[in-house]
Length: 272
Image (cartoon, rainbow, N blue to C red; front, side):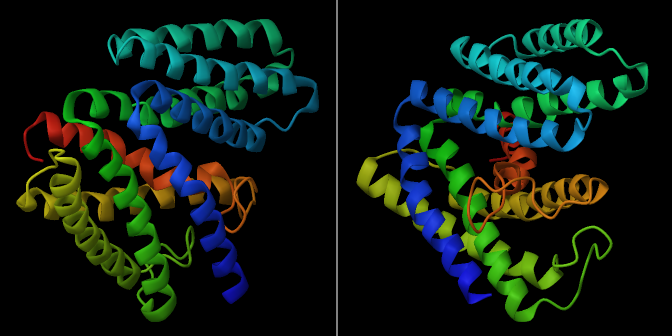
């Protein structure tokens, strides 16, 4: 366990500074989100498309998801529903042209459509979050999820006894969730103080940080369990191995995919 924890830490120390630096500029954020969508979409479709004759559709599906992400970002997060529907139509058209076996149409099209909505659609909420509510809040959304995951991981290892989804995610516990929640609150408070004092950036009010941390605790957990269910369906432990110690890219962002749209929604309602 110590070796795995060490590997996780080293990977995080290498990757995290680069990811954080991408939030300095909106264009670099588009590049970051597109790169993550590319890797995560590939992992999801690689799990689902088992027929070697139709591997070409994997690349079509990934390309459509990445293409939607880039175009949506370039359009300054406008016309999202229209772009998503157009991407879905293109995905459907390509499926008709490339899939020859009727028996695999449903699973293949469902997987590529899930990639488009679940990965590209949800992660692209970073764009309107960044543009409407500031880079500081967008970066907080990312880093607080990171810290929540870290706190939940270590609290679960040390005190986790009350399991909440044994058949899907055996390691997930109420104690881990509570530990992650406290970690997210503590980090968010420190983050707000530092960013407002050093960078003069506006971050959500202190009272909102509790709601924000609770949102992370709930929806990060749902996101993790959802992705775990997908992996269990395909009898896989990890979605990939691109991040040593963390598994695949989809494993790393599963909670973020659920948290980010909800965070944006709460901002638009004026709750955060």
